[in-house]
Length: 114
Image (spheres, helix red, strand yellow):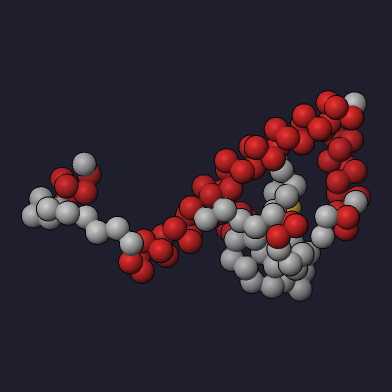
């Protein structure tokens, strides 16, 4: 609707093309999880880093080089993040661990997942 209101002379809207692909890559793409990515590569921009990357604080499954990449990736990562967080919580209940204990264990044993 908004497209039609802004462009009344247009009778169709073309999907695809370079602009659509760039928008998808910036907004909707889901960052790679630890098991799928190089541990020294940002999950969003895919640039290698010589400094330690920051993990998503909610799911602890993806890495970002900075807050800007994390913010740009959020729209694509949000659904996956919530699912991963829920799975982690369910695993904690099965194991009898609280989330703080598990978070500490995961941070201490990150090398197992890389």
